Length: 231
Image (cartoon, rainbow, N blue to C red):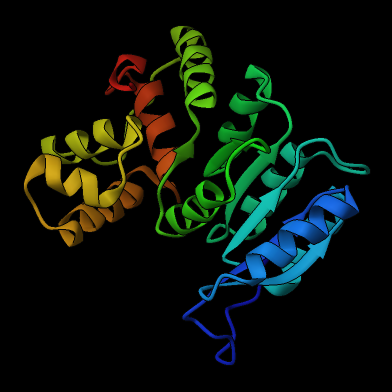
């Protein structure tokens, strides 16, 4: 399991573990992220096994994970990191937007899937968003994800939720499935952003999940929302 965050860490910064097997790309991204005043790269690794080990040792807020890496691929590494470090958000940053990669990454608990063609500004925004508990998919990845999951849920067997979700909680989930951030959901529902965060916390507790991604997946599987709720 991941250690608790230390008191000496500067909590004004989002701590990042960067996992990519291309040294030039990894070092370049590390330098760019290091120039952001509210971000701190605390570790860099070159393969999936190292990523899992480092995540357990340093307990980062966010992991930026490549998919195709030696020793352990990014999908399996993400799964292991989420099992050991449920409070760590994982952004999959890949050269590929294959449907299978997108679906597999989100299914094992990744909070974001972006391609390496994404702008640096978009990546920084995604880091801040997933740290706040949001889901981030670029346009192509979002469509691939919901198209694929629409096929998968057809054969799924519904499960009983341990607690019934309230109507407003379902509304929050539907908006989350569309990719809206907490502030945008608050605007749609005409409530405070803090109220949206409270609803999400209650949803996580009732469903026994630890992220918006997992909550949306569960709601899709149960049939409470549909892929049509996504843009």
